[in-house]
Amino acid sequence: MRAPMLFIAASLAVVAAAHAGSGAPVPLRVVGDGIPEPLAGLAGDPARGRAIVVDRQRGLCLLCHTGPFPEQRFQGTLAPSLAGAGTRWTVAQLRLRVADSRAIDPATIMPSYHRADGLARVAKPFEGRPILDAQQVEDVIAFLATLQDKEGPKR
Amino acid sequence: MTRRGVLAAALAAALATAAAAQGDGRLSGFAFMGPDTQAMQKDDTANPGMLWVAEGEALWSQPAGQSGRSCASCHGEAAQALPGVAARYPAIDDATGEAVTLDGRINLCRQRNQQAPPLALEGRDMLSLSAFVGHRSRGMPIDPPDDPRLAPVRERGEALYRLRQGQLNFSCANCHDDNAGGRLGAAPIPQAHPTGYPIYRLEWQAVGSLQRRLRNCLTGVRAEPFAYGAPELTALEAYLASRARGMELETPAVRP
Image 1 (tube, each protein chain N blue to C red):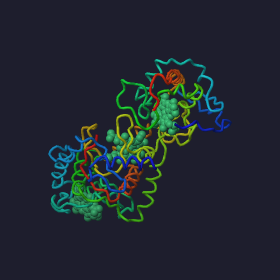
Image 2: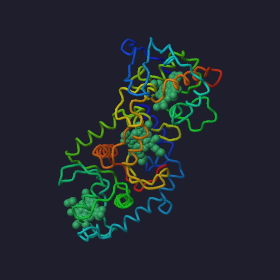
Image 3: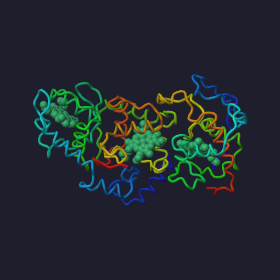
Image 4: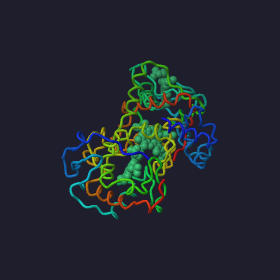
C-alpha cells in the first residue's frame, strides 16, 4: 500500500477551474495532504455514495478497484481494494484522493474526479465538466468513510 | 514496465496458445480471450468474419467504375491475390508521398485504377474487401516497410499513443503497456497489437476495422474520437504495426 505523497500545498492550494457553465467544478481548497472542508459546503449521503461507487457510468470506481461489494461481478484489478479505506485515510485525505488524485501523484491512472483543467482532447459532451459534481464527490466521501476495516477484508 | 512484464510472462505461461505468444513477451489479443472465443476464431466454419471474407472475394472479381475492370483484372484471380500485402500496411503511397492504410490504398485503386467512387470507410463493401485482402496474409508476419518516409508518421503515432487524453485522462500506454493483463471491470486489457483486423467483434455483432476499435478506446476515456480516415488514425495504425513487427496476422480475428 502506498503512503500518500507529500506535495506542494501552496501551488495546489486552490485549483481554480474556469467557471464556464453550471457544470463547472468548484474550487478545491487543499490544506496539507487533504481537503478538510466539504466541497461547496455540501453534506454527503453514504447510500447515494455507494450507488455512485458501484455505477460503471458515473463512479467508474470498480473498473479499477475491488471492494466490499459482494453483489458486483467483474471488479477491476488495476487498483487496491477500497475495503477499509475509511480506516486508512482521513475524510480530508479521501476528499483530495477522489477530487484530485493527480495532486497526490501526477502519474496516477486514477482520474481527478472534480477537475476539468489540464486535460487534452476531451469529448464535447464532457468538456469543462468534472466526472463527478461537488454533491456526488461528497456522497462518495461519506460512503468511503463508512468502509472501516471490520466491514471487509484488507487486501 | 515491470508489472507488464510479470503479467505478460504469467499469461504466456498460463495460456498454452503457442501461436499467439512471441516468446518476447508480446501477445496477440487472442491470448487474452476465453477458450470459446478462441475456438470460434480458429474454426473457419464458426468464425463469422469468414462471411465478410467470402463477400470480399466475390467483390474482387466484380467490375466497377468507368474502367469496367475488377480488382482481378489487374491483380489476378482471388486465389493469387496480393499475398502478404496487408501485412505491410500502412505504407507510403508513392504518388502523393503520404502514408495510407490498407483501406485507403483500396480506395486509391478504386479512384485511380477503376475510375470508381471511393467506398465508404466502415461500409460493408470496404470491410469485405479489406477482410479478403487481410485474409490473403493470414499466418504471415506483420512486416512494416523500412521506408524512412514512415518514420515521422510512426513518431506522430507514438506521441498520440503516449498522450493522456479525454475526461478520464488516459493514454493508450496507461492501459496497453502499463496495465496489460489486468482487468478493467470485466474486460481483460490486451497489449493492443493489430494482429487480426478487420475483426469480427462479438460486442458489435459485425466486422469492424482497426480504426473503429481505436475510436472505441478513445470514446471509452471520453476523448474526442478522430474521424475515420483521419491522419491521426493512420499514424496510430503505423505505430501499432511497428510495435507488432513479426507477429502473425490472424485476419479475420474474433474479439469479445
